[in-house]
Length: 193
Image 1 (cartoon, helix red, strand yellow):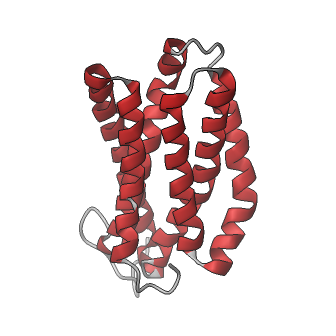
Image 2: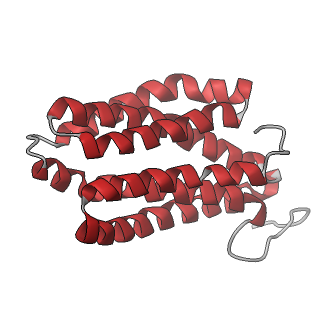
Image 3: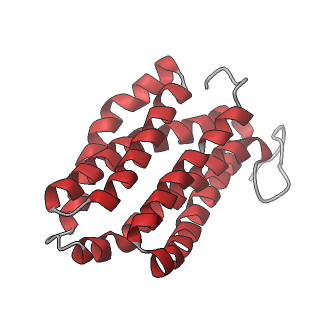
């Protein structure tokens, strides 16, 4: 494989992509526990067929992705990312008040719409933060953050559920998602934000 004329990067991650990886970590902290615990939570609340949660979430995610990418390119990453994060947080904050299937599906719709907007905008932001020759490492850094967030979120929220119950756990998950906004403070001078 030829490497002439190409920069080689040392290290395991892309430093310029770290703010986007933080955003991804916070997203993972919020959405990871959903996959791990939503079925148990729904059964505890007496909601039958919790699998519908994922169906509605997926539909909402697909709907939001039909317009959010174009909007992100035209209006800037933050224009899509910030409402997306708040939408995910709103869905998570609805969960403690969920006692029937309709309420569960409403939360799923909010989470799907938010994630369908925020996640692609975060990926695009990751690529915006680095030079073309560092994009592969930047995307790897992004997924390192996201996957770590899913793992950490599932373990941490599991411990919170055991000690304080699901109501507190979903509120903490929403707070974790909103902590991702700190990354935008770090990169506010970037033209695409």
